[in-house]
Length: 74
Image (tube, rainbow, N blue to C red):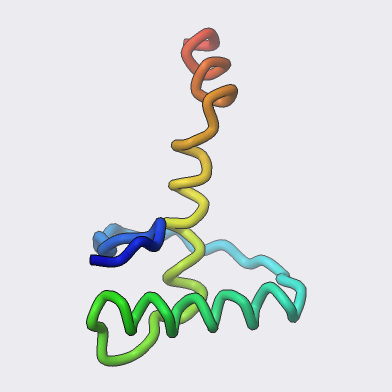
C-alpha cells in the first residue's frame, strides 16, 4: 500500500475554479501524479486539476488551529 498522503479519489460534483501556479509547482504536481499512479496501480497519472482538491482538503482537515477556530465560530 502507498505511503502517500493521497489515497483513492471520490467522484463529487466539482465547482470550477481558475488558479495560476508557479511552473515549478506544476512540474511537482505532474511528478506527484506519476508517482501516485505507479503506487496505486492507475494506468495513467491523474492530472494536477484532479490532485489539487484532495490535497487542499487533507491540508485543511489536518490544520488543528483551523479546526479549533471553526468549532468556536459555530
